[in-house]
Each structure stands twice: as C-alpha cells, then as structure tokens.
Image (cartoon, rainbow, N blue to C red):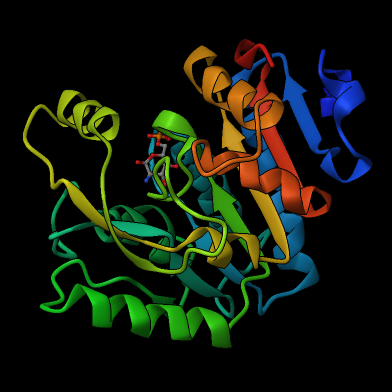
Length: 255
Ligand code: GLP
C-alpha cells in the first residue's frame, strides 16, 4: 500500500497543514476495495448505531458487495445503523431501475438488513419541501460516516461545479457533462435534475471515505487535491475538513 498525502504534490509547499489528507493507494482496485470495506466495517463495529450516508455509482458496487458478504458471514452487523442516501434523480421513482433508491435497496438496505432508512423522494410534488424535510432529518441525525465517490467536474453527490460550501439539500440542475455521461452509460435519456445532499451536509459527517479508481477519477481528484479550493470543483471542499477524510484508490488514479 502506498500511503501518500497532498504534501507530496508539487504544490505541497503552499498548502497549510490542515490540508494534509489521508490518501491510501493500492496497486489494484480489488485491494483498495478490501481496504475501504474494512475501514467501513470497523466504523460499524465500533459504533453499531452509526448513521451512514451512502453514495451510489459503479465505484461503490464492489465495496457494498464485499460488505454484504461480511454481513452474510455474520462478521458484521448493520441492522441497528441508520442509512441516508446521498442523492437522487428528479423526477425518479423508488422502483426505477436507474434510480439510486433502487440501487441502494438492492446493494445496501436489504443485504445489510438495515431497518432505519431515510431516502429522498424523487417523485415529491414539491422538490423544495422534500429537500427541506431531508435536510431537517440530516440536521437531527448527524452522519457518523459519509461514503462518497467523485464524478464529472469533481462533483460529490450531485453537487455540480458552482455548488457552494454552505449548500444544503436541494434540487439541482445537472451539468451537461454529467447528463452526457449518464446518457452514455444508460443508453437512454435520464433526468436533468436531481435532489442532493449539499456540501455542508456532506462535510458535517464525522468521517468521510471517498472511493475512486482509475485514470478518469484521477483527473477529477488531481483538480480537487491540488487546484484551488473553490465551488468550481466541489470535491476541493473536502480539504477544509481534511482531518476526517480518507481516500481509498488504486495506483491507476495517478495522483
Ligand atoms: C454519480 C453520483 C455520485 C457518484 C458519482 C460517481 O452521478 N451522483 O454520488 O459518486 O456520480 O459515479 P460512478 O462511481 O458511477 O463513477
């Protein structure tokens, strides 16, 4: 395992200490997946009532699969934890095969036997009210852990470039890059809006684990780690809470 920090970057000299992040890079994706799953499992072992925010996306699939294996082998118990989901297309129903509630139901909520689940209603008539409801819940139940991926433009959740540090759960317009990616992957039209936890909701978690594999994610991460801390790259805000962030990745990231 290669343990690195942003100190090693060419711009390191300019970075204050608070920006030193824990970046754990492994030669292969599968080793990084195991390490990330182990880290998540140890948080739940230490706190069986942990409140956890779950990202979706292809990146997380092997990690959730590994954790589901641990659950079925009775090596870990998520049954008393509370789950929040990070973001959802709008409009999008809970049974839509492309929706994130559907994804989490199949990969997390059911296999992990979690009984307390909070999801965003992608069919809410009033998206603003739905966002407010979800935001209140997040304020009442501070997440112990947020599991994140990173997407086009350095987005976290669906906080696209332009998202502010103090943003809360809200309806957002997806960037062209995100919409194009989703159209490509799904081979059909996808919504152009989404409900997402805001940057301030995400940063309020006591621990943040970001998983990223491969060259393309490396591009987004480089910008987030070594570029300016700015709404133009929402993941760059993670550097403001660097003491609680761990990034698990493979060497292919090239960061
Ligand atoms: C999606 C989600 C994010 C996710 C990211 C990466 O659009 N909104 O929560 O982390 O983009 O997805 P993937 O892992 O499929 O590349």
